[in-house]
Amino acid sequence: MAIKEFKTESKRLLDMMANSIYTNTDIFLRELISNASDALDKRHILSLTDDQIPANEPKIRIDIDKKDRVITISDNGVGMDREELEDNLGTIARSGSFEFKKDLSEKDEADIIGQFGVGFYSAFMVADKVEVISRKVKEEKASKWVSDMNGYEISSAEKDDYGTTITLHIKKNTKEKKYDKYLESSQIQDLVKKYSDFIRYPIEMKVETYDYKDGKSEKVVKDQVVNSMQPIWKKNKKDIKAEDYDNYYMQEYYDFNKPLKVIHYKVEGNTSYTALLFIPGQRPFNYYTNDYKLGLKLYSRGVFIKDEAKEIVSDYFRFIRGVVDSDDLSLNISREILQQDHQMGVLKRSIDKKIKSTLQSMLEKEREDYEKFFDNFGSQLKYGCYDNFGANKDVLIDLLMFKSSREDKYVTLKEYVENMKEGQSEIYYAAGESIDKIKQLPQMEKILDKGYEVLYFTDSVDEFLTSIIMEYDGKKFQSILKGDLDLDSEEEKKELEKKNEENKDLISKIKEALKDKVSDVRLSSRLKTYPVCLVSDDQLSIEMEKILKQMNQEGVKANKILEINPDHELFAALKKMSENGEDISEYAGLLYDQASLMAGLELEDPAGYALKVSELMLKAIK
Image 1 (cartoon, rainbow, N blue to C red):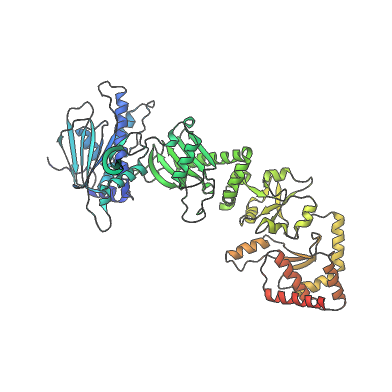
Image 2: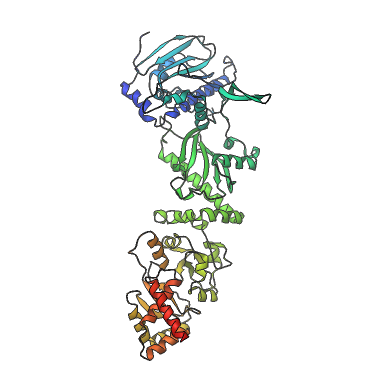
């Protein structure tokens, strides 16, 4: 029979199908197995209403002939007659599955995977010749379709059973690609496991195993089902034990720790899907590196579509691991690119909503577990609030926690506001490298004495976060390290104003001595034990300055103010020296250096500071 031209505009389209649309040659097997699964689905559905279609044991078989460089994929599904071979394989982008699905009533539940008709042509990525022999159910004759991509021919053929057999003549190796690997049994098993493990029908092939007899091992080749058929997430939850979830998670993600939380649920609606999600029990060691794999695994009707599917979960939930399997995804012709942004958006919003509700429930009902989670991934939620100019702050803000001066335990912002003192109008916080260092800050003494709770900000993002959140429940955030901290009564304010006025000459001398280091010097009522402290009076705090400096932004500096304790004996001594006409500039420098050290800042001249302290010690000894 004469070779026929493909019913397309040009051969260039077929070249594109085989060489351009698919970016990964491995997926040819996924496409052909999915087509075989479709054929088995069709036969099963038709048999329900047609007594002339005999029942069978549905299966897919793969055979490898390494010597002749041939791979064969067979199924005992519905099969195709001559006309269907012509229509479905001779016309690119026509799909028998699509036409079949259109003919079904809405009540028929047929999970037909292939709907675009070009997956079959992925075979030409690895084969230079493809043969298809098919016999349709209820038909006596079989037909054969053969193509080398230049055209195709159809002829009569013999086939004992209903179904389809596809034979691929594998290409020879090139400098760029090694096709021999597809003739290795182990490679084909790996591809089945990766892409088609959850196809609902058994996939059989010959597998090399070892039998042990009389203490000796003997290599045996035997038929074996190489796919598991039913994934754990498709099973009924009541049939799954906790250790089943744990084992699946630890094996799938190479984690020695059990997951902290398992989220297994099913959604039915415009976009139906099943999800099995995990919150890790420990933060992965590479979580903040480029090596960490983001996103979820995405399946469509049990067929693996994509790893690291970042499109279906927000970045602030990037710690989530697991799988999503949807029956309703509209895929493009290669199944590699998800086709409808709207559909993916619906899926993403649904998954995000479930993750948030799970975390909220943990916070309310499983506080200990939630605090473990927050230790591992709380920073991610904070960055989620801060990112994109706070677009997601309302979603995440009630999930945030901070350690506080109230027993050094975690509190939420809601809990902080509920515990506020009567008349308190602001949420107080202090930023520092660690809780221990924050506790040692001179500014902490008075505010704790007055009974106010202070949030400990130890993450680099914490203070930046307040510039985005601004307030919670009408209460603004206030750093105790900022200049304007209104804790005094009117009487105390007047007393402090009086002391500043009485000592304005001394304050002016100190300010002059430190004019290149601070913007102002003033007496303070916030100090008790300590003689001095540094505060800032603008948006950029001293702690922010340190963080930005670590990020190599050297030119950014906080506007520093030196506050002095007027009731400290060191101030009295300094005042006496000034009244006696002594130069106090060096002492002013020492006070600034002391305040800098307590604020965690690096000294500009640590050696000079050490010499000055030594001189003072010698004077005291003499």
